[in-house]
Length: 137
Image (cartoon, rainbow, N blue to C red; front, side):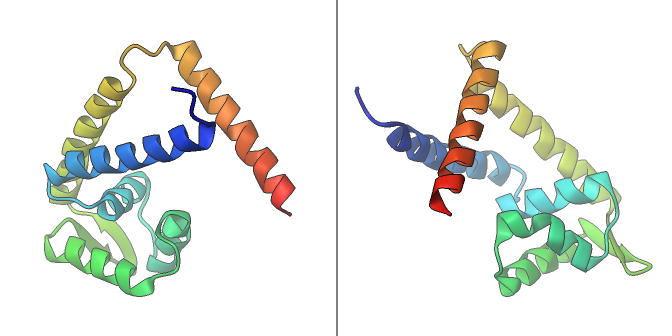
C-alpha cells in the first residue's frame, strides 16, 4: 500500500491506544491511572507537581484529573503523606504488574523490528515532528 506517513502514524497511534487500554484493563487501570502510578513510582509529589508532570498527557481537564486521582485513592493505590502523594504497597504492586504487562506488549509490538530499525524510526519521527512544529509557527 502506498499510503502517506500521516496515514500510518494515525493508524499506529489508534492501534497503540487500543492495545494499551486492553493491556491495562487486565489490572483494572486506565491509561491516565497508569501514568499517575508510573510518575509516583519515581518520586512522591505534591498534587500540583503531579499535575505539571502529567499535564502534557492529560490536557487541562481538571475534573478528569480529580476523578482519576479519586479512583486511585479509593482503591487504596495511592495515599497522601505529609501533603505528598505516594504509592501504597498495593499501588506499587499494581504498578509492577501493569509494568510487566506493558513490557510484554512492547516486545510483541516490536516483533520483527531490529533495534537499529526502531531507533531509526524514532529518530525520523522526532525530526519530522520538530520540522512540522517549526513550519507551523
